[in-house]
Length: 87
Image 1 (tube, rainbow, N blue to C red):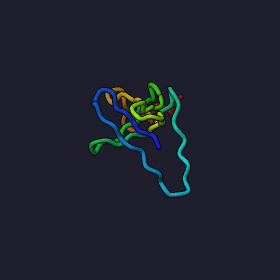
Image 2 (image 1 turned 90 degrees about the horizontal axis):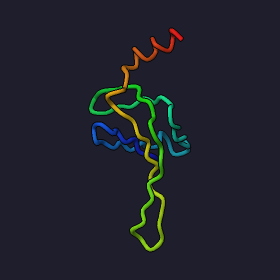
Image 3 (image 1 turned 180 degrees about the vertical axis):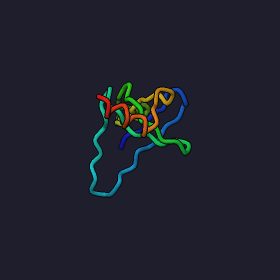
Image 4 (image 1 turned 45 degrees about the vertical axis):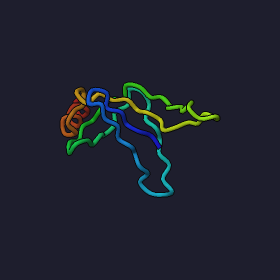
């Protein structure tokens, strides 16, 4: 599992599995992903990816992978498709 962290909105969105046998691929830096938050959908560029480590326990454990995006730089899906068609 991973979480999308929207930097400029101070929000975290947990990405759930689509179905039990579905393996999620964590997006990489620079990749564009579709993000739905507060009733809006935007295409956002991944700015950073890291793994959350919990060191508070006797044996540290790995938490969710954090995927950092910036909402203000997001683009409406229709505009994104048009911009990609021009390339």
